[in-house]
Length: 163
Length: 391
Image 1: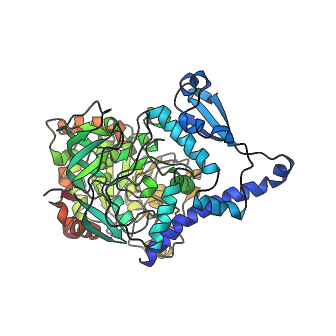
Image 2: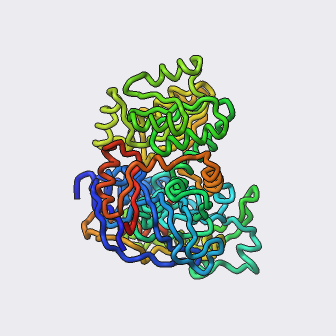
Image 3: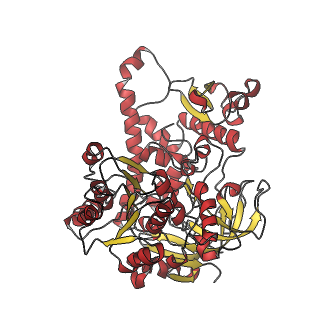
């Protein structure tokens, strides 16, 4: 693969790294207060439905329900008629530090299933099903390192991000 | 089936790939009749937008015939002749309800990539990298169309295939720019770029009542189309000073509205081009911002600037001082075609929007790699290369 392609792939990886560093820095900035009070962050999506349709009889969408007792969940009306906010946060302390980067890259970070469940719940509530992507047409996939790195990024792309 | 695949930087090949399948209840499978190159594809080909994987099927601007529908599709039947918006939108999230369809929350299955890059994820787009969903593109015999009732539009009987093709993206983008920046009757509108999107932005501005529309480019054949088919005035930036000419034509004020339809690979005859080219090659900036800088400088005080050209990352020497001190309104968007395609098709049927002239080179899909080479080099006056799968 040409240098430009490698640089492009590196840029994609760098983007994730920058995102991770930003989040790590944010964690570091709040480390003092975190030491005083361990606090996991609420991760929240807004669903374009009224509260009564999002959690009828206080039941949760299946992807969130499947997380069981590992998360707290709150359902509140969004401001200005924008629908319903569904928030979830881990009951166990969120991982941090360099070790968490390896967990994120290998799909073992406990925040990842929370993000994925929130996004899938939103899709189920708004459109009735989760958009599927495989199988779909593609030509020859070169098994080079850059391609494998992109494959890893894509595999985590529903469970990472700023959520 | 056959499909045009990205095989590396500036390399494509027609390969045999698996047929698409119905994966969701609202999917349809479209037999592609016409599918066209777009200037924004060149950013993918050149490696300027990362997250392309070898083997990805290219193409996002297309029309064809419905071959199969999922069980939840209501508006379309097998055999219907439709044009499909290049962006994939659910029609039911908050952004879709606001008619900001390319911001759809549910059309991009890889949101993390663009959330990290931009702080939020736009919707998905056919054949436009894994950052925009990783959907297989339309340069193929068949393509899967998710949310088919939302994104596919029946073509009126009076509109031929080639005209309708450009409602998919180029015209929809032009309409997005003119509408979102609020072109009003009597406005002077300047459009940077006389490619298909620029010409359509010019036409959309005219139909919204603009008093004068001035299109800027360097390629004589494109400027001739803008003048003779669209009815715009033109400036060749290699032969004239754009800023001085615009001031001269607007009583010294500058255009009320400036629409940038060039994107991250813009150029100029001056040293600015070499400065940006070097920085881009060294990856010290991802995008060359020559056209958008010029548009911001040229715009009248209190005017509006709209970015239709595709940008992916960061631009150096961005004139933020001009934006602030001249009280400019600056907006940008991927196209919200779901909002505009019905109007565009109606206007096409009435002969108010002409697009077939854009298809300067029509060829079978098997020749698509040659088509992209010609399109990239702008050889033989190529404005758009259009491929005919199965041909």
